[in-house]
Length: 494
Image 1 (tube, helix red, strand yellow):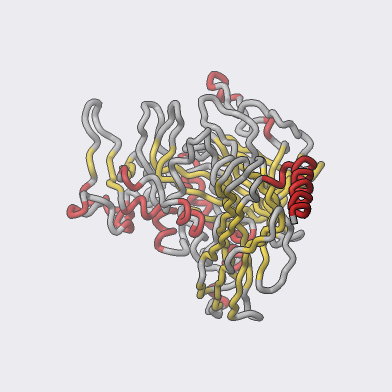
Image 2: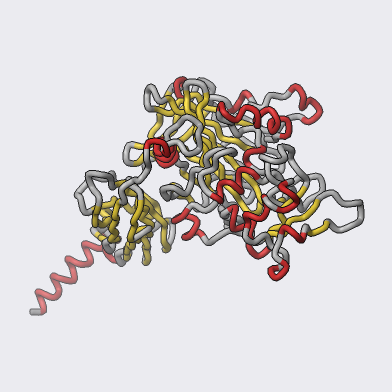
């Protein structure tokens, strides 16, 4: 017996000498996943988003590589993804599943996370169910906004090419002001008149608000009815100096889970542009600010896409930052680089990882192009899932300017490194599409499209608050609204 014990000790010590790692405890890996929404009833196809996290503790020798994939009830193939843990903690992961239609009116299913390395671990099954409702649109109602494009086609395009957001952070400084619903912000705002003598506080327009609610604009529809319609673009095509004074405790936007699940403040506009179709995404933020200067309430940021119906493909992207357009002509793509985790980088004829500054020289402003040459046809990135391309948007921390990559700079601007919270924006049928000024697709859309004042107030001297999206020069008018375009474009700003 003594000899056996002695031999066991000798063998064990030898193994430790040959491979000392066996003495370290194995890391503990867990995963969890949730479907959003878990139950859906409405128009189809629809997209179920799955938000999850992988947690690792007891890492003895960082960095630790963890490989995982998503598995689902229909057995569909999914690629293996890799994430690196430098220390104990959790990392968020997500995916989507688009399904439903006339051939699949009801469906129950699930997805789960399966860790394949360095351990075999499986999360809970994130169950969901959908029930598709039959569309009741009649032929005469298929183009309710009367812009010459079938509304169902507009919805399809807005869903198909919706962006992937990459927010930014500096060290531990995360994004402070998340996406926010524009009508919610209006409901918690007072209307102020910006035309007041020096040294005097701006007046609250009391007949546009509810006295019992600190003159907040409730219901928001009254913004177009007060002052004899002065704030309605259809009745007054000029930009006014009235502005929304947003309640300070409301302007940060909902928490991240709500922002990720429901895409508050993301609105879409689809319109013909010659032989192409222009797809405009407009994102509202209740507050925007830089670490140095430029703070203001109520901001609109935009990503603009051009789609060719003849080839069924995107042909051009436009990211807008600080009033400058960053364009990529996809027909001039030179190289496509796979970055991993479903991300791809398209490089154009002007590819350069250091395009310089987007800033223009104000002394030569009249001669400066709206599209700085170093940024055009340089680089754009896409997130590809379910064979759909989603343009990636790198968002400037707190100021929310839209960039195509982390490269490029702007004086005194916060970083746009994309190292913060990131996600493919959610899609809810019937919610995103605004329609046109004369023919909005909902009451909320009517308010957003027609209000002709500023959507917030400035907080630093010399920095004007922004007007609504239809008073931005990037807004494209349909052919049946050329009369409005002639009146409104003279007031537009970038």
